[in-house]
Image (tube, rainbow, N blue to C red):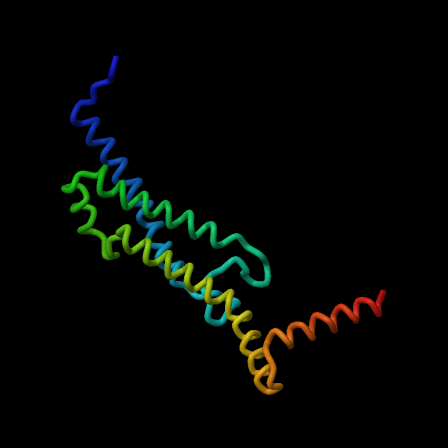
Length: 158
């Protein structure tokens, strides 16, 4: 009961697959562009979960786009015959998306997100170190004093 496809039907299916993969490849190109884009609100950071003061879900979308781009890159090499792929490539001016380029772009994006998110904590730690140095004490002493002060203020207000 298996259906045998003739050569013409196989070509139609391959052309459909090539067309779908070509459109998905276009999305992959946009992923590479977005992964290198800068945030609108954060001076030196990437497009991140906080856009315009609102908490948008950006990082999971970037992860999904990277995953889809990886799948497309894999399908492009396994489903489309090389002669069809070459005919498609002649019309493209964009560079080919490879699994390595996708992984590199996504890891750079994640690095930029991490750096952007850690900058405030690093800045406050640097300020604490400066204060501790100027007072000839340890950072832990300043933190302990701050904790005691806050606890005292809470007790007074209650």
